[in-house]
Length: 215
Image (cartoon, rainbow, N blue to C red; front, side, top):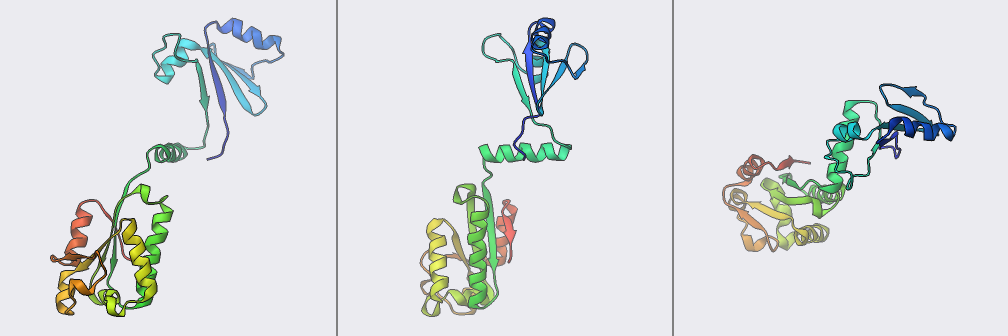
């Protein structure tokens, strides 16, 4: 969003007197329509408008004491631009809390590093953990072998432990554990067994509104 004010509208109680005041300063309306004066002011338009009309247009119950009678406007080219700015303002005041589930089922240390790196970048991209309600990594199939602690790559271990300490859930597919004879004790501390299976867990979380990502 470009940092600019397009119009400053003054709600005036006496339109003719206010217009005369600015005329005495050498300002003349570039446009005047139905007791509304538009005065050019070095890139900004100063608007004189009846105070009661401005209050009505702004949806304000004017008691004459708590409202200044001034409105600022930022003009954009399209309705889509308006929606984008309103959404950005909303997210600034009330950041969206994301719920995210990642899938990892491919074998290999490089793939594990890649996915964990994606998770870190995702967290940073949404503005940090304060904007995340829940984040889960569901691992199944050959991918789970990369997390057997006896042979676990040190970088993968560090990345996983850091993400877990920040709040990420590490879910291990119960079916994969059974098929590959992997016990819970052989997996990193804090691993959550998924007796229903990794695929079912993905389905459950998506039903709850989680964003599903498979890098």
